Each structure stands twice: as structure tokens, then as C-alpha cells.
Amino acid sequence: MRLQVRILLPQHKIRKLLLQRLFYFVNCHMAKGTHSYLEDNRNKSIKIYVNGKIVPREYASISVFDSGFLLGDGIWEGIRLLNEKLVSLDAHLDRLFFGAKQLDINIGFSRKELIKIIYETLNANNMKNDVHIRLIVSRGLKKTPYQHPNANIKGSTIVIIPEYKKADKKVNEKGINLVTVNIRRGTSDTQDPRLNTLSKLNCILACIEADKAGADEGIMLDINGNVSTCNSTNFFIIKKGEVWTSKGMYCLPGITRKMVINICKEKNIPIYERDFSIEDVHASDEAFVTGTFAGIIPAINIDGYKISNGIRGELTYKLQEYYSEKLINLYPKI
Ligand SMILES: Cc1ncc(COP(=O)(O)O)c(C=O)c1O
Image 1 (cartoon, helix red, strand yellow):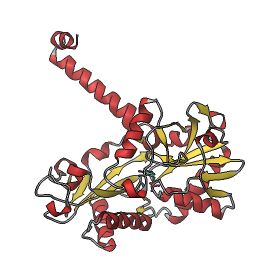
Image 2 (cartoon, helix red, strand yellow):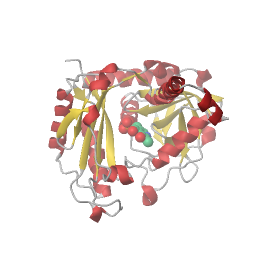
Image 3 (tube, rainbow, N blue to C red):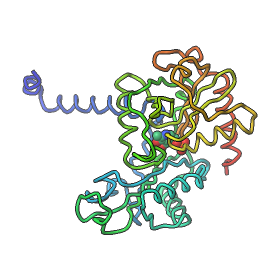
């Protein structure tokens, strides 16, 4: 049947169909959920840092023998530029250098040098605001596709991709849908789920499962069956005025997660890092997820259970306000 359709359709129609498919894919999959962003044409001509050179995006490439490509062997950070300053840069670099140490990767740059090349990349693009950068460090070039670091022949590979990415505020207002997925968070002695490694297999499998179930993100349980986190954000619930999140042993130590915990402490909102079950989640008053890109996003439907009557809850809204205030105070307009 498929073959028949191909034979009957002229080339330009096939091309159109393929483009439509691509458009559908980009719009329905890329720009959906916690990482929804407003398309920005300026991204077509950004410059990217690759191993010491800042080049137009079409020339930004690394070898097929790179450890990151071959094995997902590396670490990364997603950092936001707000009013010409990189938000929580110290915390991001702490996490990056901690990950590098755990993976026994020599980044080859000091913190100061890394900061310098990040700002050089931003300056080369004349970027000031509403930018999200992806800083990627892999173990580097190999002489043959083999996992052992002794197959590596040079130092680390460093790539910095800065993009104009403004989060879609509608998502922060309207909220997202979550489902509990079967994929669990592992332990630190299997594949440490607290490290921000290039290999995101665990999260990607959870993401695919959630997507197939029609949800924006998947809630992942830990090995003991307690609620841990989501596949690309951290997860919180609110019960009777108390904010709960996992103990953090099985999730990425999110920088926004930490900020929200600190805001609760500063504002005398009871906050607990504790074990809780998916039934607690279904019966919660409010729920939300956190991440650098979009801040705080309400979760309004979880496994088909309406949370907070299917709209953003009051305390979630308050926390969003406190979070924005904090960012504006720390990174005021210049
Ligand atoms: C699995 C996972 N959890 C949570 C987060 C959010 O972390 P942060 O607040 O540091 O952006 C991320 C961000 O990349 C992530 O990949």
C-alpha cells in the first residue's frame, strides 16, 4: 500500500508531505511541555564555540570519533542568560566540575577560563537576554570507538551552544500534564542519577513513555517506589500548605529545585525533602515542576487525576512570583 502511494504521488507532493511531517514533529514535539519556547529566527545565524573556535552554526561540528558521540561520555549544563548575566553560574559550574570529577574527565579549563569562553561566545553573538546556553564537555577524541579512556588521544571536547530561547509563559500559567512512567531512577552505584551526564538514556526512555501516554513529562519513581523526579525537571507537591519534594538521592540536584527550597525557607513556607508515594501525589492540593529553562510550572493533571481543579494553584503562583522577584533582584536590568 505504501509503495503504491509513493508511485502515485509526484516528487514535489512527497516532499511536501515530508515537510508537513517535519513541521508537525517540530511543533508538536519540540515546542511542547516544560521546554516550550517561542521560535526565534535569530537562531538560524548563531555562532557556536567548538574547541577554541567560535564558528557559524553550519560549520559547528565535532568528529565521529568523539567520546560524546560514540558513548555519551561527558557532562553538560543548561544555563540561562538574564540581563547580561548567567543565572546561578557558580552552582552550574560546581555541578559540572563535580560531574567531571566523578567521570574522571579533565575539563582542561579552570572555572575562570570556562567563564571567559562562555562570555566570549555570548559577546560574539551580541547576546544580552532571553538566551539559554548549552555547555557540553565530552572526554574528547578517540583513536577508535572503544569505551576505555585509554583510547582517547586528546583532551576534552568543549562546545557552547547559545540560543535565543524565551520560555512560553502560557505553560507557566496553564500548567502541564504528567504520567507516572515505568522507568525508574537507578542508584548511585549503578548509573548515578544525580550526575548530569551526556548519556540521558534513563530520562529519554521515561520521556518517550510519557509522550506515548500523551503527557508532557513522566514522573519517575526511585528503586523503593517513592516519587523521585520528572524526566527533565524536578518535582514538588503541596499538601495542606506544606511543600514536599524527594530527598534528592535519585534525582538531578536541580539548581532551580534548590532555589525553590531556599525561597520556602526564607518565606517561612514549610518545606520537606521526604519520601512520598504516587498516591500522595494523586491526592495533593497542588503540584509543580522546576527547571532552569522555564522556572516553575504547575502540574494540573497527573495520571488522569485533576490537581488543584485543573488550574494553577495559589501557592504555586506565589512561589512563581517569589522566584521571579529573586531573579530580578539578583540579576537586575542593566
Ligand atoms: C533530569 C533533570 N532533572 C531536573 C532538571 C532541572 O535542573 P535545573 O534546575 O538545574 O535546570 C534537569 C535539567 O536539565 C534535568 O535534566
